[in-house]
Image (cartoon, rainbow over all chains, first blue to last red):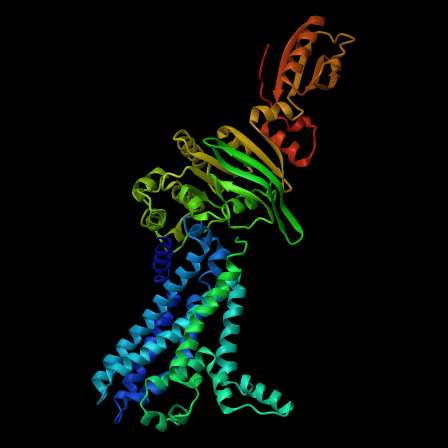
Length: 279
Length: 315
């Protein structure tokens, strides 16, 4: 009952936020432009388009989710709003779980809506659309979205002020999105360097695993569950085709990593939040 | 039954002790005023009762439930107006009340509550446009939802105009008459004086006084002063021999005695009356302000200029 109250309050409040409306529309605009643009020229292929959509998702989804949720708890804690919820039969766990659900619904809803419009455009423009795979792609993207909502809510639960929550959100974005998967110096170059200094080497499989441990890495590699072999070959993802790949590089293990990101950050945030002095 | 009980309740922040060894017991059905200057530890105490803050040591129960372990049971039965409460600017007054009703599973009608706190015309406005006083009244209305057994209010009248304070006082008294225990903190003493059965005074994290206002007056070491105007001042009055007379001064035909008790005042009046002809009497009672200053400044002397003149007996 009380969990439902927290969720309800948050949905009621957040849907009136112009910032959230704005970023939701931004994602919709990108999706529409993309499917319209690719669809109205030449002979578009759904898989190649979705492959390009991954890049857009990796760029925008973390930002949208972090912006939508980094203040969810810390902001209310600093302003005193939180005392309202905690003056009623809501536990601190209800607050964390309720915020997680409400913000996931809002951000996930915006992104799902953008893809519904995208699917409609694809059905109209594209010669062939495999709806099942399109939906699976959207499902994985939503899982990726919820990961970042979880990270943001966890950070928000662990911090006491708006500015710290913002610092945490920016830090998380840089560390997980830029440093881990797209920076010249990244965990793998560091591991290689250390291994080289120690006179050993690291297997490619190990490095692929490290790369896949971030939400973005796991999300991108989870796409082997969606894309047929021909597309994997076409886009150069030969490791997806390797029959001898270890289990930890298979598609299902990517889901395990994505699920861990869903659960661990809010747990850590709650662990800090439940012992904190509020207000 | 005991509504609130704290046992050696202590809260330290890094190097500051906000509350030190607080033992407090609030009986069922009373209106209790929790007094003290800003920073005395009132809000910290209330925050610990509501589990916003975790005590460093000691324990507290609210309505018999442990303040740390049984928060849901407490929050279900208690109405709260916390210090520094911010409402949701984007939600309307009615939406706030509906949420409260929902979260408490209560059978209250939001419109009736709006009416009760004088906001019946503003129910559909977003709270972001409310004045401080309107927000405070809405917050009070929210605290009253679900017929709580106890209401805890932290500085409830801040931001209210005198009319609002008066209405608020009446609301509190009506609640108390229906059997609700009221615990509220304030640094505005006149409010407390008017409605409270008992008060506790906090200073620098410690409870320095806990009693009814009448008893506090009596024990505070300053019942007030007696000023007698006489035709001629007799010699050898020896007023200071009476118990409870702490100081006497004679200025022309005026005799002034500082007394700690009403009995002492009477003794002074009788003695002077037998020795001389009294033409005028002014008896001053110490106001709560003076009491408060005494307790919180650690002074036991009342400056003459500070006493509120409340003529008690004019002969």
